[in-house]
Image 1 (cartoon, one colour):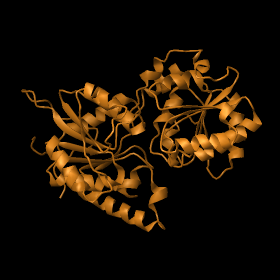
Image 2 (cartoon, one colour):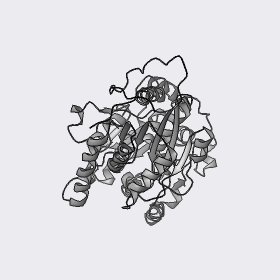
Image 3 (cartoon, helix red, strand yellow):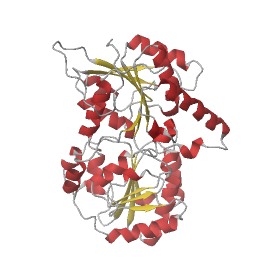
Image 4 (cartoon, helix red, strand yellow):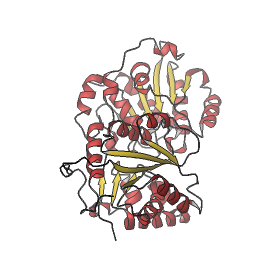
Length: 402
């Protein structure tokens, strides 16, 4: 294992390589499962671009079943191991330690498991892993505060463990950082913002397909409102469906396109049917061709989430040059083109949301996808910048925090 060096600021260049080639740095990525969702898609973009001669990635996952990206990870030369224990079990620390010992040794552990990262980093420190990174991917402040005493206490304990055991903390947005690192996180030099990196070249190369709507069963004269997201409470599908019901009354030509799976899919389908929207709604399972769908089949994008970190789907919709309607609960960093988008608070009624959405129908976006992609590739949201900063962080060993 490499000798420890003093902690370096995220984004600084790593030391010049020695004359003799060094073995790759062993990195454990601890994540729930590698399904096709925002965090996991970003991790896949990173894995595709990190130099395997410098970095050896092992994905330590909690899911027992195979997920969307597992086979590609193995094809890339990454390792994939299953922890074999629920995060909510008292046996979890021992099971995680057993997994890391068998798969290691590691020089870096990067946890993507939100507040349980406190336990994960404590285990990593006990095993002697010198670089320990907690990554906040979501703003969960609405759930973490009092009067929910058990969750408030759990958050306080986990924050304390993270502060004690982390050598670095990363957050995808300003709103996500306090959820793991507290409101004074900016005062701690270990904690940094790292926006997700997006592969905007996927939109530059999208093939125009005028027949895609008909292939999806959408009549050609419809105005299509799209939504991409897992069918979980956070995405606020119930409110979205109420908006859709009002839109259909105001303009029968509206059609709704949902892309995603999740534990609430059956409930979403029942709500669509109960609102009489089944004949004007198309539901697609999670799939890899979202850029093609957004570019060829959607006219505007609706995203009324209760909370977010930095939502991949919303960034992709803007890369496709779609006007977007989003809730004010979403991190401001995600509103990349405010002149083309509409931000509304969730305390406004679904009927008001519907009326405001229809007003946007005649509003020009102003630029085409090619122009937008060119602009976005020059921002910190480009995958190239995200990978560069992670290479710097992974490439410099860190002294243990006492």
